[in-house]
Length: 264
Length: 290
Image 1 (cartoon, rainbow over the protein chains, first blue to last red):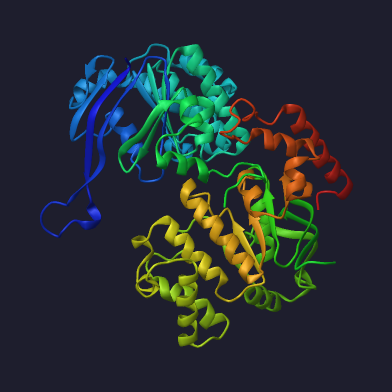
Image 2 (image 1 turned 180 degrees about the vertical axis):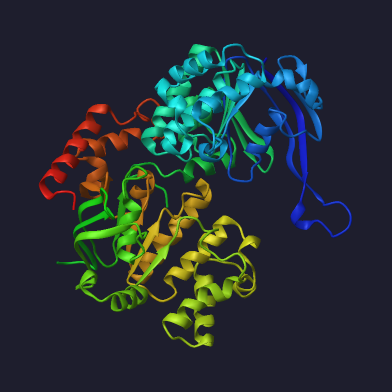
């Protein structure tokens, strides 16, 4: 099992309601989540804005520390590990971010951006690994000397993917990585991701609010609403017979490119 | 020429540079919704900006006509044009957070345009604002008028901008990706609201979006753009049943649909890109880089 998550709770201080003196009141973002991510699975995490899906992702990568419950990554309990202990693990779980413009340093070239984490984790021969990563995401090697602003949205997102896979991780979290892209680049990036998961034997968690994208890519789906799992099912089962009212509401809200869909 | 907005052979280019819009021709009738679709950078927002006279300084209109209610805007003096646009058109912007001034209360942001530009009295403008906030289903409009933008959710802010756009009874509204920043359930409410308001007020609506799903729900007709050139003008239903241009068909095939997981998400094929690129080159050869 890649991930085992048990009764996960996470609360954060609500700084908008912090009194002048004393601590801010805490808001509960995640309210007792339990689920597993098997090795090699592609898990979809869906929900509306504010449902806690990004917070869940950040907790899984231990960018946030859970308040209670447990997160086990490949048999190791990482729930409350300190940063020094986590450091050596971090190579194994990587993240691809939503907005490639703000997650790529505008002052560094693509080659430097991909090589950064490689050097940090002490990989030998980073140059060759950068070239290899660019090959895998279908970008020309010459892109290593370009700056992020010279690339299109789809190309930038490929750089984000290259940076993650260059470290040869076991697990990748992709947080809304195609929501800012055009349909055509969206299709390209999703097809690429699908291919990489297969070739590199990755385990992937894919956060999105778009059930159409999730259906295409994921084998299993967790639906979040107000920090709770309202439904968890195999993809086909979920779409054939959604159990939770919230899942049905999400599905009904999607405008399909079909003038005959009953929608309004 | 029938219709409220008629754009004829509109070309826009970078000052001293290449073309951004290439001989764009389209019509929007009163009470109709016309969609503008295309990938980012195709120039769909630029058409709206050209109509509203808010093109970035680096761009200029090099040819064409923009007829608004039987009057070519480009033949008017800048002052006349501004007045005419201000009195008859409005914009629903993409990002409801940046479109509202964070340091002013909601009320004055809606009424200011009515008072300063259209010369309404303050009391009349306030009454109108309250009426419209109620019309866009904002609970307790009196309280909301006194709040600041950060106190409201994204959906609420977008409702306020919709109310604000309809406040002066414009004849034409340009909606520039109004729901891109919202999640699907909120998007549905907002689109429904825009459609209801548009039908009730009989406004002509130019709807910029990259989402063909949204087009199929709100538009009566649409134009597909590639590199600033219209590749297809179509009635909505005909477009989805039978797209004529290969690029239109490819865009449809790239759109993900949860009902047909295997048959969607095909990237636009190279051969189709070549076809449209050739058409763009042919256009530039014929008309020059004007």
